[in-house]
Amino acid sequence: MSWKQTIDERKEIILATASIDGNPNAIVVISMGIMDDKLLIGACVMNKTLENLRANNRVVVVAKDNGEYYRIKGTALIQTAGNYFDHIYKNSNPPMPKAVIVIDIVEVFDLDKQQIVTL
Image (cartoon, rainbow, N blue to C red; front, side, top):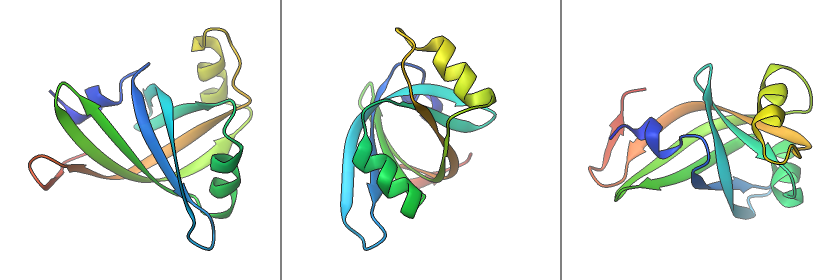
């Protein structure tokens, strides 16, 4: 199985952020898949997460599928309009995201094999 399958559309993943002064926050979110090599997450009710992202755009995602675990590091951007937002809005059921979190993936680490995975 590929690491990309662990973050396929509609999979539960854990998104971790930190405030500007380093206070961590983690939340279970639903992946909306990958588009243009970016991980997309619809933002509905995640006030602390969005507040953290506005101050510190570095994120970590932990994903698990069929006994395989990955840690994905990246930088995030919040969008309320545009291609990514339109895609998420159309594919949400019911359509409700107020924004989309667009994560530029910079590193994938296989937690079982203890090694970096090629993007």
